[in-house]
Image 1 (cartoon, rainbow, N blue to C red):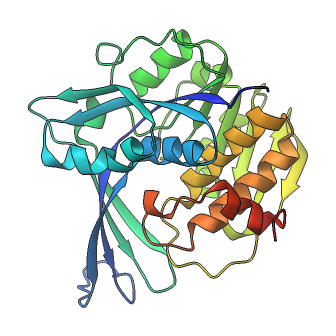
Image 2 (image 1 turned 90 degrees about the vertical axis):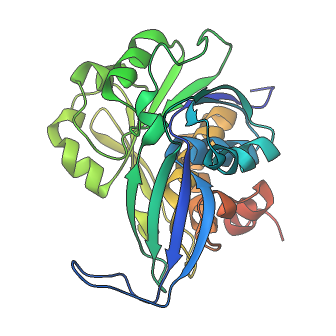
Length: 289
């Protein structure tokens, strides 16, 4: 590919409210002593920023509320020159919010209130006829909207099946690339069998595996790091994988690149604030000194 990858991301935009504590609470338990911070987030926005920081030209499509949270939620996308003309501002609805608790080992618990993301629909989406190398979406949007995209967009269509929820079989049949973690792979089970799509299973610290036509075609380990915060690592992997796959056409290299980017994203707090640069990813890959 002679030009930087051109990626259209259709997905959620959230403000993440993060509490860092020593241990995660059990059901009914109160944990005190935490430190609170606000970060831009949302799986769509996260993946858009990850791809942009790794060299792609990225356009973001979605919805936010007409409130102060919207500016915070979009701040890093704007600062990194993601095209935001496809983001619709809606009156009478709040910007999406994610409530996140992170423990000392970097593990997290997340509750998402979708807000404006639940209003992303054919009527709120801008013109989808632009010239893009790939369209990427996730499942923090209404199922009906995902179905509309599957019927409408042309070219490479990629879905990160997260968070897992029932999905029409014809949507899965349309996808060219599907990305699932272990929980999501178990949720969809037999629905993933017999698909033409390239299916990527992410395994956290154990790396990732690619399957095509039911057979493993590539596998990559993840660089060994000591995580600070795993929030956004999966979204970073997705953005990085798509950029590398479009740039080089190699599934194996894209897996390795995605795993390195995901590992790098665990070394800082927050989702978007932890997204690595190309130099940081290449350093973990051993490509730079």
